[in-house]
Image (cartoon, rainbow, N blue to C red; front, side):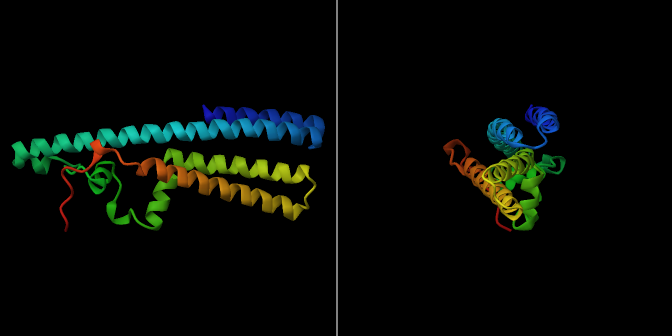
Length: 184
């Protein structure tokens, strides 16, 4: 739905730009329209993070069930391709994330490839466009407009990243590991 809102807004802004030739009316309408798109994007990212937390909860539950099966029938272990451990490395293995590359650059690339991560980049770009429009409205130079756009993009991306990290890192006592992955 967010991408439909974004697409519709871009088409509407193109029509306004044709009529106003990127004048002050266009800038005012674009700032308002893109602010609504920004709000819809942030709300969408929030919902996706909530869904991801739910998925994480269900993965932990499935790993615990798998652990119970293997307690009863250890001979079944070769038949399972996902983890039996309910800590973060076990959940990541079940989700198909290679734990050996889950640090550093591999972790950043994985985050950007997720739906909330990709939408965060798009929403940050919308924030950058709003920053450029505001700078243009107050008659900044071309360099000032570019710097304002870059600053708004980086600020939005960092804030969305912090929000994403915070939302995933909250402690839930029911998700405390009961069957941690053995140390190698």
